Length: 465
Ligand SMILES: Cc1ncc(COP(=O)(O)O)c(C=O)c1O
Figure 1: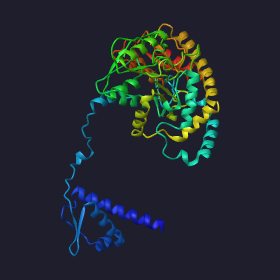
Figure 2: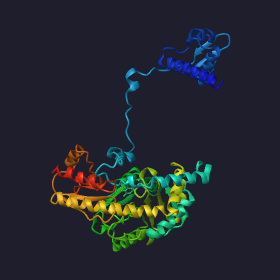
Figure 3: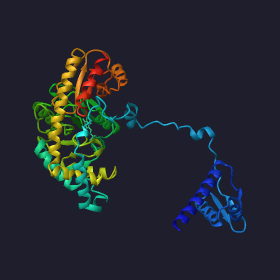
């Protein structure tokens, strides 16, 4: 029975589409008379009921007019599209706000960690079995609750687990009520830009700096001003920015840590000018020589918005990140989130919460820290041995990639030639506001590469010079 209904519906729909098309193309002009349903049914070997239903449907849509005793007529006149216009793309100009992002190509995250794609965790060492077990248990425990609409602020047990972890590991001062779970740090930046920046307002960020942040601010129509960076991190200037974006524990991309003196200077400026500071703590879980300084947020929780992500510490497609915000921003941000994508997926949040609570997160980080440490050492050693004059290695105390400055050759040309050798070299140029950039070089990812992959990658890189 169901099959019969489905078949009839399909035939009726097919007849409707054919008639709509004939009317739109003009092969059935306005006021032309259609055959009676009995005649058409016989002609097309359809049942009369199907033809009646199709005529009725098109009458309700306004394509046909049916008059008792007279017949069925085409009720509208449609201008047929010119043949070439039908397929030609319509001219399109992006909005002024979106233009900078659209023309720059946006963010390009590597889908596969070829040598030396940056920012990719080692997934071959991920505790898949443990993750699967926890997922099954969480699904059993919470059942349909995980399948309903969720809290735009995030799954409460995850916020609780994160606030404890961040307090202990990073000195972040927060209650679960100040924490918002998001799909990415990028989403946090986009939301903050929307909430805090009016078109034309000034935002300061490090130059060179994280392109994702620049794109988010530009797409809000803000004026983005670059701040110089040296071995002590970003240099505080004089002015009145509405918003300041910093990567204090590991400057992106040059790798320096913001000194305590500079942190205090930035906070004093923010206090004086009533600015907000965004602290992007994107990869502070991975440190090799010494533990990074606690988060800047701990010094001024009322001025600082703290961002973190699981993209590096667990896996990027998890699409979970967080922000810790001063109390007055909580409700406005939750409301904004509710009109963007509602909330993050519930099951991954529940699994992540249990993974942290049961101590697996801390254990996983310990293991990855050791693994990445040995990979950083190997990359450093191979580059120094093979390319001592061509590359300058910047200090790499932590993170998933090493920044190298180019002393010989051209960044764009070498990057293009490297691609022919299946080498992906993330360019420093994308981090500079001003072109040509002040320094040339690359951010060489090492975390997702096994020993042999690092050795072979550096060997291939050396053949380019
Ligand atoms: C400075 C910085 N912030 C944030 C992120 C990305 O985080 P997410 O994947 O959560 O947007 C990255 C990724 O490379 C980054 O380098």
